[in-house]
Every structure is written in structure tokens, then in C-alpha cells.
Length: 85
Image (cartoon, rainbow, N blue to C red; front, side, top):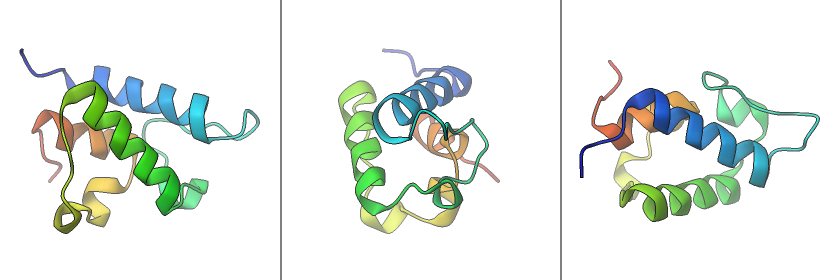
């Protein structure tokens, strides 16, 4: 299977966050900082399970750095292998 483009994965993460985690009145966008938006460790775990289910990717604990989990777009970059600089 060809890797999904960053924008498609970003959109899928944003849809998941807004449908499953965020309040309807407090949606997140692709580049919003997840921690500042209120995504806590339990919510992040749900996102990681979503990524594993949808893309077969698990982010090991040692790679859960601020650069990777900052936003939906940085998570998508990790998933697609397009590591952010």
C-alpha cells in the first residue's frame, strides 16, 4: 500500500479529533497545538490507537516528542514518514 499523503492523513486526524475528542464548540484545526487545545494524555492515546487502526502505525513512547505530537499536521508527517524539520 502506498503511503497516504500528509494532507490526507492530517485531515483524517482533524476529523477524528473533532468527532471523538473535542467539544463541538471547540474544534481543532490542522496546525493548532494539541496540548493548548486541551488534548490530554488520554485523548492522545485515543489518537494513537486511531493511527494504528487506520494506518498500521504505532508511535513508540520514545518518539512521542513535542515535535511529533504538536499538531495534527506533525502527527501526520510522522505517520507518512515526512518528518518535520
